[in-house]
Length: 219
Image 1: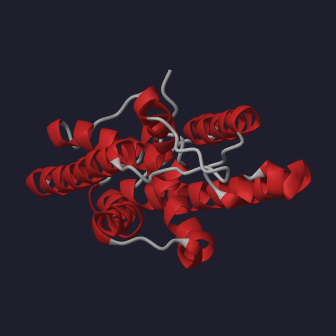
Image 2: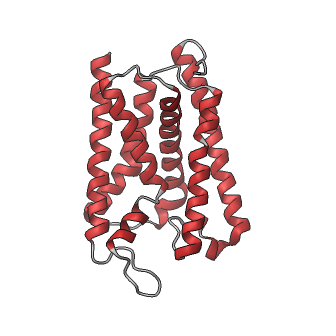
């Protein structure tokens, strides 16, 4: 069981690592990447900052990081680790759902960028969630971890709003304050929060069923 779990987590980590490094190179080195409405091309450092400002990239990095820790120890546990793991699993789920419903119709990529997009949105999320369903470890999702993992999406929202106010650039159209206004942006953010809570609750139930007992909070 552990051998198969390690192989699955290794595949997840390698896929995301290759996709992230490839796309980062395309973003930083690509001459036409991130052209602003005024025609200004963002510099390499600004492109890199924008790249890591996508929720998709952050959730993939969380998934890769927790998968990496599970390669060495598939039964890993710990208070901080639980928060990171639930953030990875729930974050990848929301990444998949939002992309399929909202972003896929407006994303038009070609070549290598399309391949990395497929990796980020079509392959890595199922690998992460299915890997958790098959190999756990469970039970690891307790109420404290569910609540603490929300610090990331809330902090992310605050960060992109500040970044957008300073630079005029927003990573996603549904949080573009300049076009939507703060009221609509906040409503969209609340909808995403509901998604996070719903999937978190579902995964907690599945975590309990799979582990045979409720996860106990760690001191």
